[in-house]
Length: 164
Ligand code: ATP
Figure 1 (cartoon, rainbow, N blue to C red):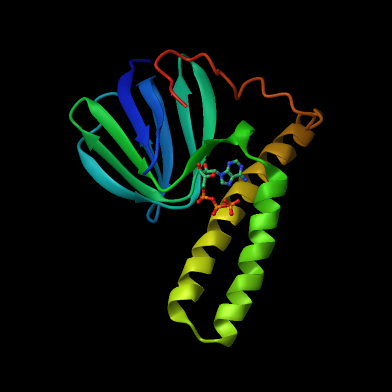
Figure 2: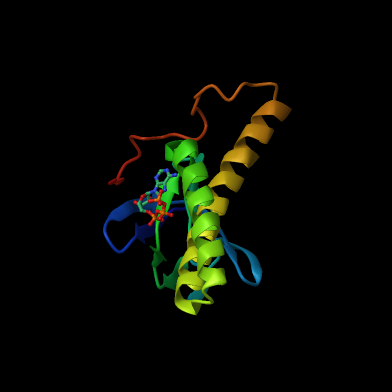
């Protein structure tokens, strides 16, 4: 499969820059696949998984929202925040979820619209992370594997061009 140049950035770091053979993202209109020479497009990204094939290996990242842009030979993802699935800290995500719920309830009691929105977004970020971890655990259970930290198939940490 032919590669295209992919760049994934967040407000504070370059998450990935290098070649990719395919990309699958979730947009509000549904799943969207990107291959070499995809037509130019800009699309919003839902808090969801991004699947990317790099050197014939599929990797999954969890993005908490952002934009995709296909521009000529290059594909950009501007993500609010993004992590490789195997790097997600489940306990941290669970704590973030519980904190967001508590703060959301307090904001709702005070009818503070700004705070409500802030904590809804925090809740959605934590939910996206936990959903992906759960999906991975279920997929492994289906394959008869334990979820004991094996990141094979997911991790190609040495992929050319990667910066984290
Ligand atoms: P928290 O309250 O735990 O920081 P958050 O949703 O507010 O969660 P973000 O603002 O989305 O966090 O992200 C801040 C940074 O921390 C980003 O670099 C993001 O990739 C990373 N991050 C957030 N949650 C996790 C997690 N559960 N596991 C690994 N990295 C995380």
